[in-house]
Amino acid sequence: MSKTTKKTSGLSTDKNWWRQAAIYQIYPRSFADSNGDGIGDIKGITSRIPYLKSLSIDAVWLSPFYPSALADGGYDVDDYRDVDPKLGTLADFDEMLAGLHAEGIRVFVDIVPNHSSNLHEWFKEALAAKPGSKARNRYIFRDGKGANGELPPSDWVSHFAPSSWTHESTFGGKNNQWFLHWFAPEQPDFNWENREVQKDFLKTLKFWSDRGVDGFRIDVAHGLAKDLSEPFRSMPVHEGLEQRGNKGKGIWGDRNEVFAIYKEWRKLFNQYDPPRVAVAEAFVHPERLPLYASTKTLGQCFDFRFIETPFEANTYRIATQEAIELAKKNKSSCTWTLSNHDQIRHATKMGLNPAVNRRDWMLSNGTSHPLDMQSGTQNALAATLYILGLPGSTYMYQGEELGLHEVSDIPEKDIQDPQYLRNLKVDKGRDGCRVPLPWTATGSSFGFGSGGAHLPQPKWFADYAVEVEEKDSLSPLAIYRKALKIRKDLQTKEEIKWHKTKDVSVLHYSRPNGWHCITNFRAQSYPMPKGEILVTSSPLVGGQIPAGTTVWFKKK
Ligand code: GLC
Ligand code: CA
Image (cartoon, rainbow, N blue to C red; front, side, top):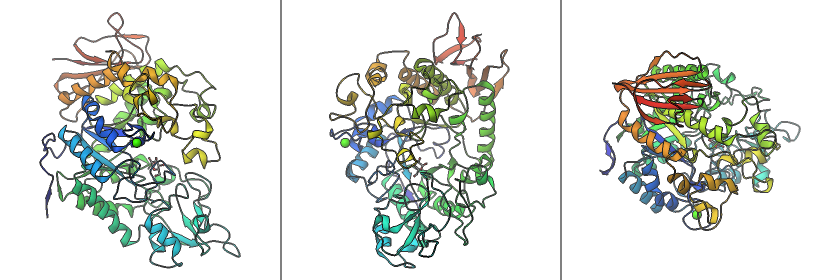
């Protein structure tokens, strides 16, 4: 059985389109609002297709847009095969997909298989059903400890602390059991040993693939398989990367059984032409990444190391080499990324003194240390040109092309993120990178929509508005546009060659066809090598490359 995508004019027929693609992540609720209710929506995305096209990206990845009560920004899914009525309809989705495809832009959707929401039909059914029933067995229900089952079944902590077990009575269940949730209580974990759960996800993947979706980003891909043998093993602190490096035998992260699931998914993906692609979000020990990125499993896996790598030459070089070697192991390609919807925006990280604890800085509403916004944006652009030049794909996050900073002073009453609300208020959470985008310098919600924004936008957003940056040839937007366009023409073989420099703070590599990239991380200034300059992340000064600058140039 072979299914062929409808012939759509803008898309290439290359099966390997994803290997060196530039993918732009859209956080739908904060991208563009078409009906003035303060929430970004599908029609808003459709209305901005010309903007997306102007970025010369190959694909967009949409964070969840499914029906959801938003206990975790949509990563609490009520129905995997529909669109949240607050965001539109399936017909709106089809219209958006066709519009993007017509412009040669492919679409990834986010699949959240570790947990549903507590409002999913299956969970409601499970709560109403008896212990041991078929309905309960789709999730992980257990009796509690203590004389009357009043204590959680194990000491496992949740990512949004404290316990990862919630008593069913919290949501109206009457059978004195507890259910497991790695994240918020509104995100009950599925029982992936259950064939019905496995089949239902195949149905979901087929549903979106048949609609023409090109790829999937797999949320918490390392989480599905769990060691539920009793007595439960102990996990009083959240399993870190080190434990997840324990050869696939951890408690609930990165267990070997998870690959059987992805092998079955791969068979489904390969029934399409071109095969559907997938990228795993797997926070695992780096040595385990290739298992998720294998041609027999998901094909690609996020390598998040640049999110934490300080903007420093030697660490960048080592991180680059390691990532390339890992990707090669399974014939995958690299997944360079600096930001996403879970991270403090990288322009802000790079504008803070590296010694500053960023969590504390956020908790102080950005007042504990000065942020140098200008140098943060400058370094961020230099880092972007550095990673955009590398072999492999790049995943960008909406707003980074504007050089946007984290919003650190969202008032407590407006915070939505469970990471803050449920985490004993020791972490400001992730709302600061999810504030709706500024499109215009003035007007309601800076052009995001006609009726305000669901998270408050600071005044300084005006300086970063699309409309403002479009008029400035040195703006981050102008540089992203230029670089992404050039990159499209220059990408060939996934090869890289390093060149010696006269300063340890300067990295220089080249790609086939004489495409060179040189980054001055910290040196005072560095002489510009001979060649035709293609794009610079900030202007040269007297023929020298200033600190915090990347230049692409061409040599014969
Ligand atoms: C992933 C998502 C994050 C979400 C979590 C639970 O890490 O990126 O936003 O909170 O999974 O679904
Ligand atoms: Ca809306």
